[in-house]
Picture 1 (cartoon, rainbow, N blue to C red):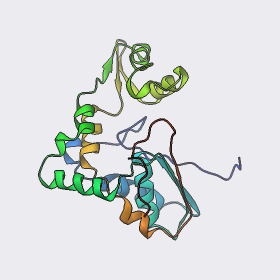
Picture 2 (tube, helix red, strand yellow):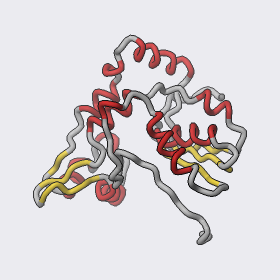
Picture 3 (spheres, rainbow, N blue to C red):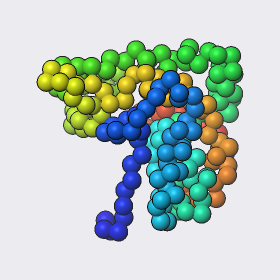
Picture 4 (tube, rainbow, N blue to C red):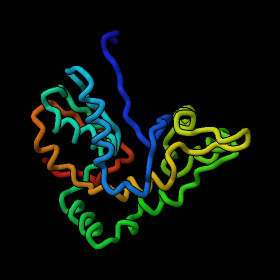
Length: 203
């Protein structure tokens, strides 16, 4: 790989980021987009924007706003729903029922503290969304996504409250941004599980 390529990872509230997060103020994903814009505007182009799941949606929004600088967009398993599903989700938001969305409830109830990283790995291995992951992938996930509170406790870097509020804040409607793109884009999805509905409609 060329030594001239520089990677910048934007992940406030996730991974090893130390950026301040205020879950009670998270009402939409604009905070993620603004963080990305702040960094992008300080970088020289051309840029390649890539992201996974919700990160790919942020990358798409960023790319649509900075097409003069972004050369390509790569979306890995993006959270893309049909226009009808987006309408239903918006309706739930307008009716004040966002907390009833399954992902929001599941994230809010997620266990965040363990006695050790090893205990966390054992808890995840072969279960739920991790059922298709090999052990080394889960180990990397835990190492990169936890912080040590004490000798007897480790905690997820992304708190259940922040994760839940992130899901709650989404409007799920990314098609307007995708329609504005006039740069090459790539969408890669998994075979067994996907974060979007089967056969999402074309923009």
